[in-house]
Image 1 (tube, rainbow, N blue to C red):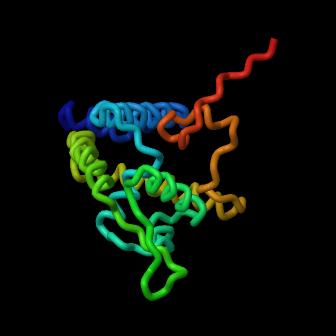
Image 2: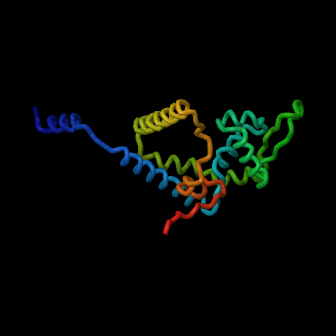
Image 3: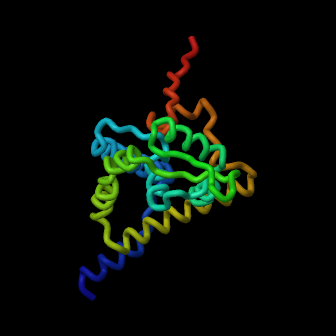
Length: 193
């Protein structure tokens, strides 16, 4: 048996130990770096949380009923109403009553909404650039790992009877990047004297 084969076998037999803290720190660093690269690419445009995704869905399904949007986005109707109110005030969408069932509201993208989306077209290009260094197998593994973690959180939420879509308590909002706070400024740390 040659030395290279022995070294390869020993490397495979060694268990790689990475602490949970190291994993979380690395994941957080990745998310922060990714968000910064998106912000840099978008220059001065700072959309509300979920705004671009929602506009993209509306653009692909112009005239969707508001209830269908809650199901697609898997969010509460009150949360969606708040997002749609902001988009409507910004003249990015318009809501009209359904011609057949006046109780239903249909959501349409305005020309301003389409222009707004065009400014964010390069988001997919940036996402492709971020993951271009990964092989197909690495992307698949990364995706499955993230999905597994999400499934764990969803199961915990069911077992402990809480809603993952509920807003964070005020004391935790200072840890959220400003563009994800729905316009709420960060609270300065409270120091006791």
